[in-house]
Image (cartoon, rainbow, N blue to C red):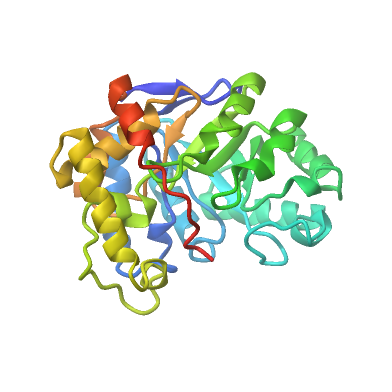
Length: 322
């Protein structure tokens, strides 16, 4: 497993990380704890050393599974988690004040809860689950984050940037107050390349690339006939004619990349890892099969520059979360 430096943190983390939303058993139907634990173990067996979870994933359930796994392993595994906004408003908005989303007492109490769930004395990367640059000079969030660092409860600080809105964290990146950013970056949403990537490169900020498969769209397994049960967020995400749109676009990606459709997931991951600004990509992996397929891509090999340029033509601007 190839590793990359996480910004200026000094941490060397695996190119393929573990996105632990799906194992929290909220909004994703079908997660089984025993299978999730096996998948986590297999990923670590194959060299993975970075897991991204959140307090909101199953109200701490994902954190507990991650902590249970890491506690019984001898390998060093770096854990990133996230604090939900106190007002429970996603995405972060200029209409809110920082004190409504991340007052100091909320940051501290959530961090303490996550530490208990994870069973660890320190969180490697503590993140805000949403962010808006209008909050930069507001509230007491920064002094609380710095205090938690001084107390040894968190090592580094990051934010998860609003869906499809990388420009809402540019001021934060340039301020020097953040160690990492987590952002949607994939073959469809290439917007971080415009302004965010130049900014993180200049200021030494690590990048966690999330949603590499566009919630399943870039796995090649979504067809016009695919169905998702009520309660699974993909039921709404792929509503209406969206499944057909995704299917047709994935067929075109496969043609341009010169692969069969079942090879698109590898292309999707290698596209992301072709950008030096990316520290790690964090696909969700709930089965050993997917762990093994995804981990095989973490070999330090990006795509040929010509293929990357071809894939840039598949940029698709839309926000299906709304």
